[in-house]
Image 1 (spheres, helix red, strand yellow):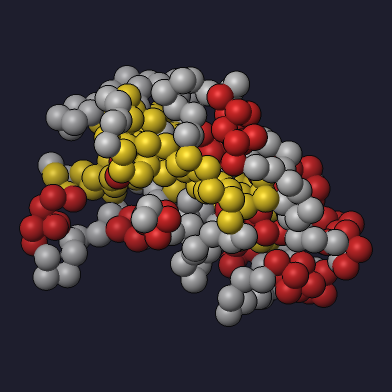
Image 2 (image 1 turned 180 degrees about the horizontal axis):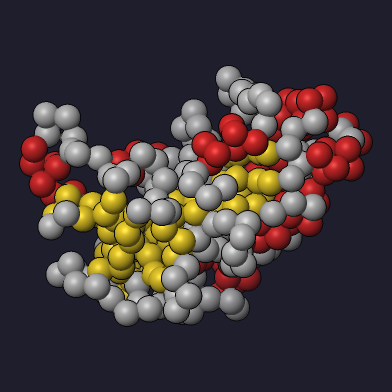
Amino acid sequence: MRDSTLSSFRRAPFALLMARFDPDAALAAMADYGVTIFGGVPTMYIGLLHLPDAERRHDLKKIASTLRIGISGGAAMPVAVIGQFEARFELPILEGYGLSETSPVATFNQLDFPRIPGSVGQPLCGVEVRIVDANDQPLADEQVGEVVIRGHNVMKGYYKKPEATAESIRNGWFHSGDLGRRDAHGNFYIVDRLKDMVIRGGFNVYPRELEEVLMTHPAIAQVAVLGVPDPTHGEEVKAVIVLKAGATLTAQETIAWCKERMAAYKYPRIVEIVAAMPMTATGKILKRAMRG
């Protein structure tokens, strides 16, 4: 796990690929083939956790006996999901961070170091990562700013797009467009996408922070928090929620629950409960499709 998720191919005799992720088929394959390493985006982990009647339909103890490592990337994994999945399948989940422009990994957790739920680990060998302000100046530990990356993994540029390249790569550093922070031990954390940050009445609201809280609600299986236009505050905070099978929860109950646990300017005033989230083919939530 020292370099990237590709190292899993050096540790296993074969790779089992699915044309499209289905939690029922994935659990069946894990049991049939004795899968040892599972790699997926957070929505896949959530799908495996909340598959109805999973205990009856699949031998979860057999699956847990062979699974050794979970690898997650593509989006931030809710801490609550990490804890639930690790407890059920008795394995560590290693989270990483990167973009297509960084080939595609920049930081990763390692089995050799203590893991901190919510952290995307440390930079890979030969890769530098910084947190900078709006003037590209490095920030101190625990301060939130843009994540910038420099190293052999960073692209040379966008094909036939010199202006976009010049905007993204400045002074030798690739600007990710992600907000993050670094702790005193060199562990990095992704706070949110810069473009996803909600500015409500002049206050910055980070959707991922609210999503982490909402994911602790016993009735919620999945959540996406986003900003929608508002004539009074500029933007209003909206939560789109998928409930666990058999669970009941109303929009007003959700708002009241959030009001008790979040600052007055943060909690969502708009809640929509849906059957499923719009997603890409790889399982990433399409927030832009929910802003209408």
